[in-house]
Length: 151
Image 1 (spheres, rainbow, N blue to C red):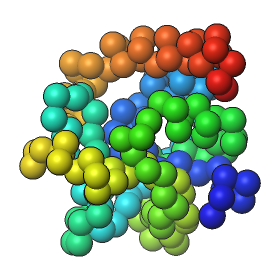
Image 2 (image 1 turned 30 degrees about the vertical axis):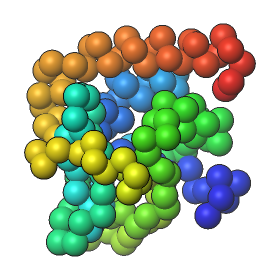
Image 3 (image 1 turned 180 degrees about the vertical axis):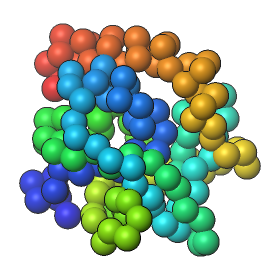
Image 4 (image 1 turned 45 degrees about the vertical axis):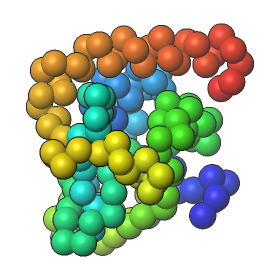
């Protein structure tokens, strides 16, 4: 699936599960709901406060399904996520008993999996220790993209 046919859905499992972070990056808070991604696990990254996601049989990762993401907003997100992640189209489940929906998901490619720790990423710890700093960073990041004309 290309960005032109993308349904405008993003499954977030890390810092982008926080509406404050998404709003700082996009300048708005899109519609969202809780969702689950099967067969993938979320781990802390070495020397970073954000996680990485990798395929993992038998695992399941909870997160947020963001809806109505425009191509321009995906461009911002692609720059934010950098080459540390690959954007893939995967089947996610938005709530109990609902059918799978395809969404964009940023996954750590094989070449960077050595950066993963064996430890799960803790969203509550991130919220307590790093959320405010991350929001400020995202606001600066968005302004820098606008200033350089990238997005």
